[in-house]
Image (tube, helix red, strand yellow):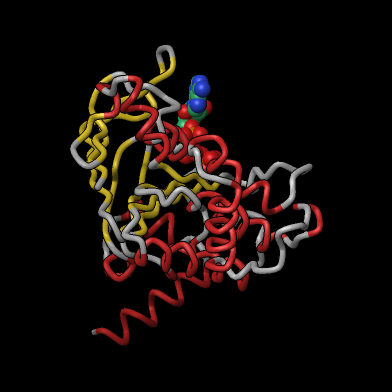
Length: 255
Ligand SMILES: Nc1ncnc2c1ncn2[C@@H]1O[C@H](COP(=O)(O)OP(=O)(O)OP(=O)(O)O)[C@@H](O)[C@H]1O
């Protein structure tokens, strides 16, 4: 579980995160949404320790990250998996080498042990028989699956994904959403996703955090999102005609 309390972060005179409090539960996929500039990336970067907050705390199963000793920080780093926007694979390395990278970096496993684990996670993301391929030889969706395999190879407790669906067609995006959700549930990972993709919001929708001007404006499930009267949420999510119609149909059916 990740508990965020009154998190504040700014740059110079500009306050970006203005006191965010929330909780992310294990086995659940939480989505962070909001307008461009709302503070989603700064929030995600704060969670993974790339930004040091001015005040407030982030605790990982009771451990506050700014209090970590060097050893605790090393341990915590190994408990985190990340899927970056665009995949961030090493272009000159094969799929196998890309996925094995964290094991080589952080463990003393033998080549055979590492290979067994790499094959297990590649199998889990339905990418068997692709070990020797280079990223350029794969489709966008396959590259995302390699990135997910690499993110889970260390068996993380926490998984952070920045726009995992960017550049994917809606069908492939749904496959990636489902994969992240299944893995999160299966391994009881605490997963946080930054997204602009409203399909993901409808598809995953377990816990949605809506940021506005650096504050938590609203939080709930996608079902609750259909029913909310919060003007900022309605204005943002239902600005598209498609989602407006979906909402109207949902409300008609449930009333
Ligand atoms: N390193 C930085 N230095 C100064 N200002 C920053 C820095 N990083 C972000 N900001 C500012 O913080 C605000 C929030 O940015 P952030 O990237 O978190 O928005 P976002 O919600 O992720 O937007 P988008 O959806 O466009 O990616 C913006 O006004 C941005 O200019």
